[in-house]
Length: 424
Image 1 (spheres, rainbow, N blue to C red):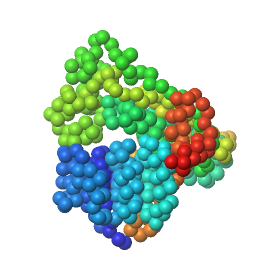
Image 2: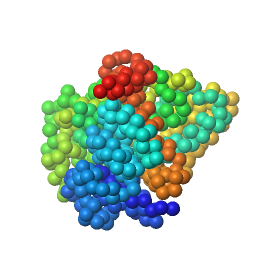
Image 3: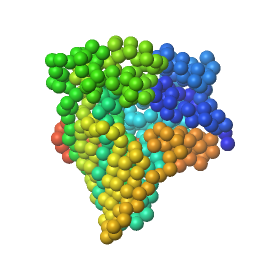
Image 4: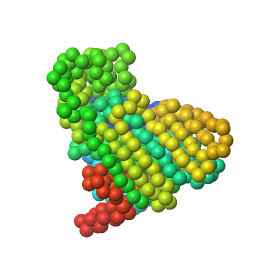
């Protein structure tokens, strides 16, 4: 088996902590050899963590890819709006590519990446839809394919974002503004649309969506509040308080690297005094919706509702599968699947075995498959860029439906975009 050399673009939480650690734990399989990251402190942390040669440290992906090929593969985990060009250039230079989702925040670029994956079909080009690699969703897939409960008829799927997670990522954080990054359903939930497509095993035909930014706006700001939590009289009682979320001993957010690359208590306090994560949630420049529901009909006539909401205590995914002869309920975070066959009084409870943390074991399983596909051609390749295009098209169509209040025919939506691209 060939040892794989991998370069990484983006030393954020996904690039530094989700995928690259697999090779620290399995050095016989390969090595991280390069990093491209514009923020000095993140770049230095990555260099030290992965013991990189100074000649392979770059300030930008442009600098990295201006060189001759220095690795077998590249993990692209930088900002959503900067995925297309490095992915395209990496493929042209002969790299295998693992691309963080979303593929791009531009639908034209998503479709072009899908076409590039066909052109460079001798190279592995995967998208990080890690849910397909989790034991939980694989168990649901087995239940559907077994036909023990008859035909799958309908799905209810909930993305319970969690009030604190939404405040962290989508009100104060990097994905708060769809103009600068992506609409919520693309940034947070192309995962979920992808997993629905995989479970149903049929293309989407129609989608209709509704949603708004209802609460986390300046209209909810009260006279006794302050623009920054450190100065606010409600800092110890408001559930969205940055003090409660990041600083208290029982702080809610455990992964604090996005607030400060070196999250000591002193650095965190300074970051909350001056940086974006210390702002009142009612005084941010956010515009993404805080709740949204989509209704989908697939070509095989299975239907699904998908609900995503900021206003939940638990940060989890919950699902209900309805069959002709039974039903299945599941909680992804609790790793519990409840199976009930009609006409019986019994419930079978399953807790799939999880060997690794990170998206219910999906992160490690995905990078393991990526490396296996490169080194010995025996990977499963569940999340190729070609099949990931579908879920992205659905996400863009859902956002268009939400804004226009129209039911969207997904084939027409996709074909119209392709025609526009071909005319350019």
